[in-house]
Length: 265
Ligand SMILES: [Zn+2]
Ligand SMILES: [Zn+2]
Image (cartoon, rainbow, N blue to C red; front, side, top):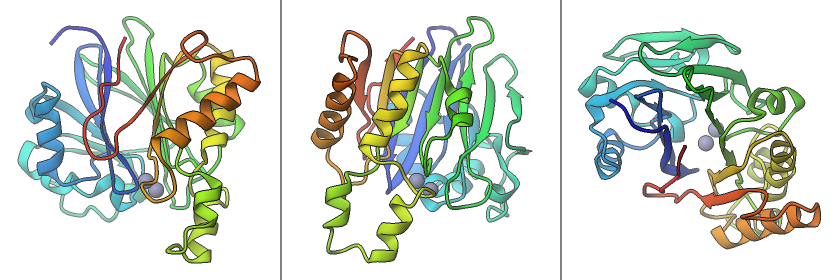
């Protein structure tokens, strides 16, 4: 397989996440959080056979990130990577499983190098990933379910060519959502759940100043966010700080329930 590196978010929301990345000629998935059938359909729609996936990297064990992985493993025997805590509930995998440590660097044969870094999300063993093409040095980071963005995470993803960055909620919509009980609201916004649109922009300001030009906002809540509010908040906040869309950076929004044309590097 040749051709340029690329990122295609297949599904991206609290209802299920899976991201296709091609790096150094190999395809990998970050998360498999909808059914195997849906992931397979989205892959084919994106021009990739599920058989061609070299590895699945899991960020953490919440259902919206691991839902389809058992069946995917049974059907395609794809090697699965995740931390001990993430792999624990997946007792019946049918393909090679590799337990990773936070901060590990994994080398995929004839493919990318994948680095993991711990995130302060509310389940043990949560990580984000940076996928690096060792031939070109170009890299793609997947950063969702962050809780908050600390200096360690900033350093980890710094100077990535593309970052899929969480923008989960608008604080006003979340506070005023009558269907969300108070403890759930606190879980989401309390520093160990998800990051808001403005927290995402705060992080992006650092990343732009450190070399990243391309962002995809992802894991948008279907209940507490909209594409328009997320991009307006993000763009306006950065504009206030002198960073202009399509001049200083490019921005796309990941669709929740279908593949999004991401970036070709
Ligand atoms: Zn999630
Ligand atoms: Zn989560």
